[in-house]
Structure formats: C-alpha cells, structure tokens
Length: 417
Image (cartoon, rainbow, N blue to C red; front, side, top):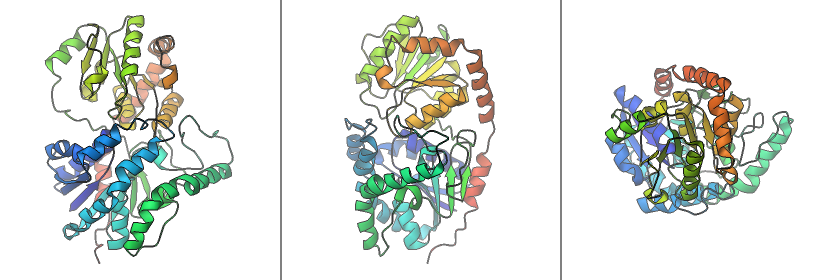
C-alpha cells in the first residue's frame, strides 16, 4: 500500500509521524512524507520520499516569532504563519500524486488532507497528538491557565466551545479555508477544528486512555493508542563526553525549554541558580547555543541534543515546557517532572501530570531560584511520587505498535473516482 504522511509544526509534530512511517515501512509499505523542508534531512534519513511544504525561511520566521509562546497569540501565529500560507501548495502537491492511490495519514493542522478527501474520495486517517485536539464539553482541556471546573454542567462546556468556534477559530481559519473550498467547488464549513478537521474514516489518538479517557463528544471513529515515543538517534550510543558526564556523579536534573523556544536565555540563567542552590548537577538541552552561558559551572553539561530514551534513565528529574512528546518520554523513563507551560497544549499536559501525581506545574513567572528548589526537593523525597512514576512506566511498556498499523491498514482503499 502507498501512504502519504502529512504534518506541519515543530519536532514534536513531526516525530510521531516519523514513528508511524517507520512502522509502515517495516511492514513493506511505501511512504511519502509531506512537511516543511526544515525537516528534510530527518525525513530522508528515515528513507522516506520527501515532498517539501513551504520553505525553511517560513519555518524559521514562525519559530522565531517573539510572541509564539504567548498563549493569547501563539495559536494565531501557528495557523497564519505556518499552516494557512501553505494550504494551496499542500493541496496541489498531494493532488498531483494521487495516481499512487494513497491512504493519507494527517495531522490536525494539515487541512489540505481533508480537502483532498472531500474532492477525490481519498481515505484519510486523522492523527491527534494530545487531548486538546478534542474540544470536549465533558472533559474540557485546559487552555492557557484557564480550565473549566470538572463538575460544571456539560451545557456550559458546549456553549464555551461554540463561542470559541464562532468568535475565534472559524474566523481565523475560515477566512483562508472557505474561499479555497469554493474555488474547488466545495461548500464552506463551520466548526472547523471541533468537527470538520476529523476524518470520517478513522481518527487515532496517540495517547492512552489513562491519560485522557474517551468522551461522548469525541469523533465516534476514534481509537486510542500508547504514546509514540519516537526518539531521533535512538539507535546511536551516547557520545563519550555525555556518558562520562552521566557516570561522573549523582543523577542530574535535565532542563529542556522546547525545541521551538528561541527565547529561553532567562530560563537557563535561572536554572543555573537552581542547580547551585541545590548543589545538584544539571544537563541543559537546547538547539540554540546562544541561549547558554559560555561560563557554565563544571557541574552542568550542555548539549544540542541527546535522545531522551538514552538520557532520562540516568536523570533524577526533568524540567521542561510540557510538549506531549517530552512529557511522554519522562513518563517512560519513570522520573518526576516539572512542567513550565507557555502555550498550546502545554497547560493541559501540565494539569494531567499534576493530577496523576508524577510532577508539578510552575508557571514562567514563578520559575525562580527562590521557589523551584523546594518543589524539586519535595518531588525527589516523595516515595508516593516515585511509586506512581514506576506504575505509569509499567503501563508504557505495553507495545501496541501492531494494533495501530492494523487499524491504519484496515482503512478501505477503494477511493479514487
């Protein structure tokens, strides 16, 4: 079978689809990958045919936007600067390759996949990476620092999401999507991100039911699976200097503000002070060396990238931004975590980690050397926290890779008209 994989976003939005692609390729299927060329080397290294969407400059302009991590403006910047500018290009690049008879495996943001499905009767599998993608009135996810009380009547959640659609999301996305739909001979759509974006063929949630239980208003064809836990470079051994550092003392605290975060200088300055106050070793991870002091103490190591599956089993605790992929890696390693959420699904992931009892939330304005060390000490001293970390780690040992591929393969492929 031929599969087109379509996704836009950061490493956290690309890695899970690389994971799916690898599983399909191992089963003998052909995989063509559509995403921004910023990730071209990564995609081609996995042996997939690569189709660029947008430009590297477009990605850098998006990722370096000064208000990307403002919860009020971040979603608009994502949609306007990265997604909507490429919707026509995405559509036509897929359309010209339909002779391959593909099944499309698409992220929520790759709207062209749904357009192709409607126009050409192509089967599409929608992949949702976090519960925030399901705008449920029964268990409303946290949006920014705001979350509805869990016992609030469902009607209030329905009204909230209706207002979000009508006042914010539909105007933002529909102003580009609907004129293009009319050009294709398709009717305009409403409730774009709460209903239309999900394929009627199959919706896959890449998170387990204990992370977010299915709700009555989720798409009826939704199947949940374990976190993907894709780790770039996982087959490689740790670099010698990393291995020597990890073996040179007690398990370090790992600090990672997110691959998109290009304004984390203050985060790392405060993290140095936190390590010094605790007299603990640290590992700093950032693809932007300009955010890191040139005079780090010897007890803190800095690297551009280390595969989490290799690093985190040697760590005492992880402090990070709250991306779903990073969150899952800490759960898989069985270590406590502190989430410092800034935008997107990070607040919702932080709330779920705290509810599970395996970590804490610290908002950026509270991320200070006077506050965070006490939280770290509480987590590291808690037998209850470690017991819960160990229990969730055992849950993640179950492997449902064959099940997810069977679901995808089971999608009927007789679709071109």
